[in-house]
Amino acid sequence: MRYPKAAAVAAATLLLTPVALAEGDPARGEKVYERCEGCHSIERDRIGPRHQGVVGRKAASIAGFAYSPAMKASGLTWDEATLDRFLEGPTKLVPGTRMGFAGVPEERDRADLIAYLKQSGG
Image (cartoon, rainbow, N blue to C red; front, side, top):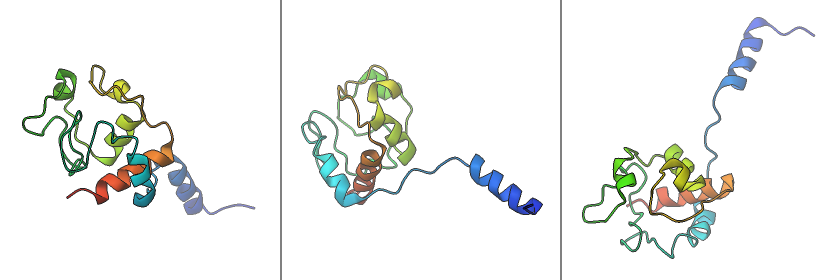
């Protein structure tokens, strides 16, 4: 069976288009966030900075928080893609960060966690 040229182009476009981040489940992400609560809180700074409003915020931008020189120099903005990469391996994305957490290896857990952070944005 032969496909029309337009169908072939459409199929090739789908194959070459980057895959978007999976939509996360904020309720499940709240459970994943329990891993973060040893150092972080949504509403207040602790050992780590507060996460309220993190999505869209520039890294190392909370006044008065003692960020590592590496985080200050990172130039990152916490969009969904950057959060996904950081949560997968914090020290891989920002060598020298003080965040001693190994990361969240499961893609679904990261997507759910990011959905929760977005929902808890404030």
